Amino acid sequence: MSNTMKWIRTSLLAGVAAAAGSAAFAQSPLDQALQVARSSTQQGAQAQEQIDEVADQADDLERQYLALRQQIEDQEVFVQQQEVFLQSQQVEISELQRQLERVDTLEAEVTPMLLEMTVALEDFIAQDLPFQMQLRQSRLDNIRNLLGDATVSVAETYRVILNAYEIESSYGRSLRVYSDVVELDGVPQDVKFLQLGRVALIRVFQSGDRAGEMEIMTKDNQEWRALPGSFAQNVQRAIRIGEEVTTPEVFIAPLPGPERAQ
Image (tube, rainbow, N blue to C red):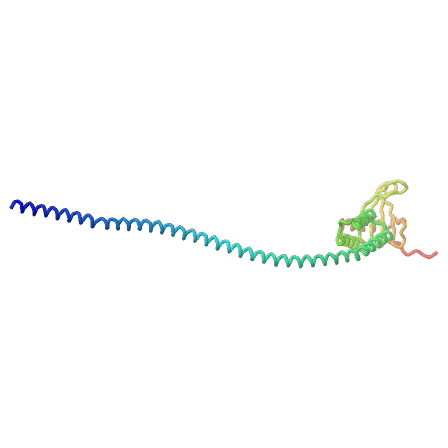
């Protein structure tokens, strides 16, 4: 009985041990599988991170590429616009060159005409009544200087000459009064001049022994002749009108009648 019980006990212990050993052996592959799964999951996560990083880099490169392509297209459009602009500029330059050639031709044609106009003006003034001669001669000198100055355009010279003609023309339609100093017998005399258009020039002495004396020069007879005192009132009225001291009014011009033939 005792031996039988020992055998049974021994058999049970051996079975339990075998079962325990068998269970321990069966648990090892599961752990390994779990470990492999965990390892695979970590590797998958790392791989996904790498994929995402590469994808981000690819997106950045694509954006850079698109931006660069847009810049290239913009530059191409700009170059095309510049080519069109340069072509139009070349056309304008060619037209300006033709105009400059025409201007050179016109200047060659106009310059002799300006010289003729200047000479004609000089001759006209020399034969005219000698009023305000210093001013008129200064105007002529200026024109001569312009004609000899290569830096002054023909158009500017032409403008100055036309202005001189206009001024000379206005002298014939106006009544003017001005003061000047004339030298008679080596003695300076203060004189007031009354210019009646281009019909007559009257001078009235303002100082010295001849103070109050009047003389007249006409277009037909360019010599100074004495005016009688009877003309003094009309002369003074005309001077006041010319100086704008009084309003314009009708006055009798102190013009001598035609000379009788001898």
